[in-house]
Length: 245
Ligand code: IPE
Ligand code: IPE
Ligand code: MG
Image (cartoon, rainbow, N blue to C red; front, side, top):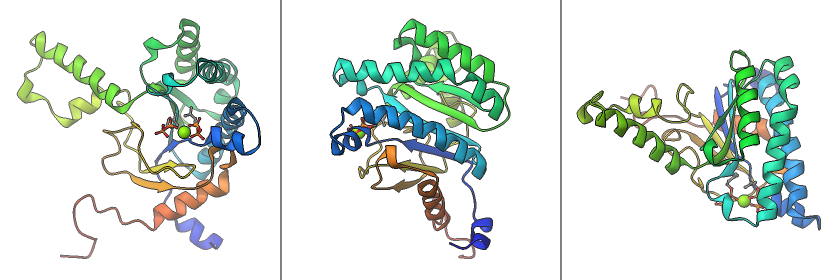
């Protein structure tokens, strides 16, 4: 694509990514699955910078699902160690790049020390005005809706709200993603074409993009390819094309 066209393209305000294929990437190289996760973790940091430079305002990545606990204990431990390392080591870089970090998902099931390091990073970066970086850990779309519904039900129990007064906005305000605009573009790497319980409420009108590239091989050129594909989409939201009657 020529640079002129590149200038004209719309950059999605919010990109969500299902970072898949770390295990397959490692297996292809005769390496343990954990080596794929390690490389994958490096790629996230680079893509965060690339997305920021391209003008993306919100980046949300799926790091660990509510279903991923069913993996072998050693793999879960390795994934948690990578997340712990990220929380503990990225503060300086986030400050330098003005990144605001937020973890979505049920944090109460994580190790206490990981919860503490998440709190420190979130608190330290919450007023940063650059890219908003959401990391989904122990996240499941259904679990998020369930927790939100429980909190809403408590308001009804206490008499604060009436059931008939519940609105879509109130439900959205009770999700982990409260205050964050819905994703414009969802990217899933490594061939699979499914949502795997990610951002179920939020993706009502999100454009989906799938690539065969495994997450550890994903780079800025791939990100731009996804953005270019997004620019070919016609977002109708149930209506008609602009210009049609
Ligand atoms: C994505 O890669 C990372 C997580 C789900 C934590 P996978 O570990 O799912 O890699 P594949 O799909 O087995 O190749
Ligand atoms: C989705 O990938 C979860 C993350 C990327 C964290 P999975 O590899 O767990 O999803 P399935 O099992 O292929 O649906
Ligand atoms: Mg997978």
